[in-house]
Length: 306
Length: 262
Image (cartoon, rainbow over all chains, first blue to last red; front, side):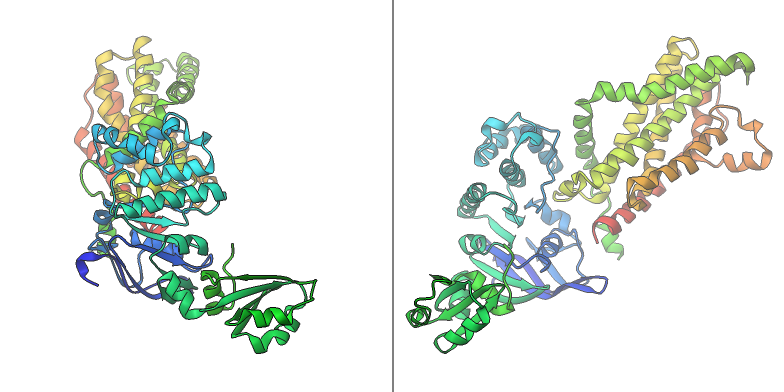
């Protein structure tokens, strides 16, 4: 990758708290204009990595460069061109929506006139025009998230660091955020996104890195990862004894995973598997295309929590 | 390691203003109850102790006891308002409200935030100290110009005690620990530093120790200013207060780095 187009570069980054290794020799690069995802379960080290990019956690080994600045030593300079959406909202609850933008803009050294000039378009972007003078404590969870997103855009950042931007939102609010993020990508922003929603990662990310216990276990484009690790339809079977069922269909499957009471069967010829299960009214059988969830299950032997 | 601590110090001379303005905006929304709440206690003390004890004590150091006490009350209220603003409000912004976390997403450093909080707490000291000064002036226990002369020292006193309280909140795991600082450090200081009775009443060994405490330096500057007398060695007191303001600033910023930016 050409250095001038690299927005984030991590090289052999390591971090542990006490005896626990949180991030283990992690390397990846994010190109300008790309949406890069860190996908993994809770505790995989995603938030730690996001905070390291901002200089809020110092790595004990390895090198981090963000927007051509070494981090954490010059993270302040990098942060002037970064927008952050944290996992937990830290808005000013007793301030109005507009006041939140003003206070935050001032932290970037913006004049009142400059903030006034950009605030209306940010409120419009966040679909909060009618809420400009409402106190944040009166907003819904989805509105608060959108305000956090608008706030992150006040300094017209080149890079957005988003830590689980839709966790805790209802499906409608989540889809609205996804749609807004696609608009930002179309405008050429670079996004680093952490998530444990495979759907979010699949919809938004150009490339992603699958993490488990601070280690990278796969990296690539979502569809390439799915093709490489699964490459065939998936049959989910609930009900019955999964271990007994596994013996029954083993000859017809490329691979079988059992997770909880669900059996995941990866079958190039799904009709043969279905034939074995014909007449079993106690079972619920679902055939579907493979997704990142399957990749994670295949690589780690366990499901991402939903 | 030096580089890591360097990166959290104030980035320039004016970044802190944005933090001060954020606190000012929040305060403006609750200004009236906040002012009344802050003033009720020192004014009650002034009247209660001033009139009550004043009758028994008569003249003290060539002035009425209530005038003597009024100057001490200005120093005490500067101390307590900066301390409480830092211990409770700044601690909440650092911890539960995540205000500092949001600021750290911007180009500001931890040092910028701490500096903004210190100046803000000192501003509240000026407000509280001036208000008591005004009450004293209205009752004829101090002249109006003397109040203006005392304001710089009140501001410096606010910076000192905000700075010291910053170290406390950088170390305290929860609110519950603040009571130790209040009852073991601040309350003894009120009685040791000449705020409510002359330091000369203390045993001489205690007098030497008491003279080193920050509130004693404040009282030695504020009381002469309010009684329109010349202060003894003002440069020494100002230097001592500056040291008490600056050193804890660096200590607390370094401690916050360890606490917040692991």
